[in-house]
Length: 158
Image (tube, rainbow, N blue to C red; front, top):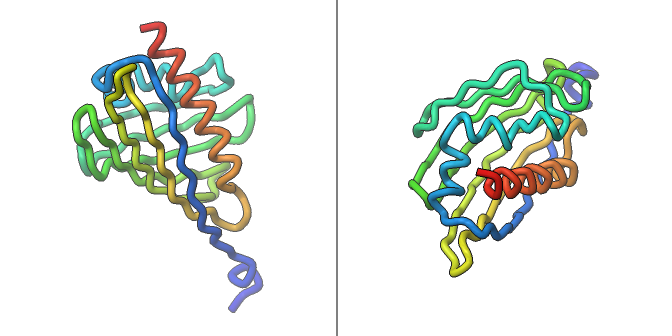
């Protein structure tokens, strides 16, 4: 076994975020399923993202690809594969994230949209494996919370 192989680690973690939106599930679902809408909030340039490439095919077994950097940092590539889509109700994806050409994580995310009297409760459950100490669940959780806040702004505007 080489020294490089001996130092490889895989850290498993998960987190759940809940967020209420005063909008119907159909509107929240559209923010995930419509490429123009998703590009605006998920890769919000006003939040520090510089998008180099974005492609999205919102169908089960199809792929969404992002190439970007955050606040001028190292290049990040994310590849998403849709596993399950239930219109206005649930989206399940598996995605990988690479920083500067190095794979740092792989996650499964379930996004549930539950109708409420006031609109929609979104439940985001992420189960991830983080490689070699590069990316960790606490940082991913903070980033996801920020994206859900950006989603709230997008829903309120449009």
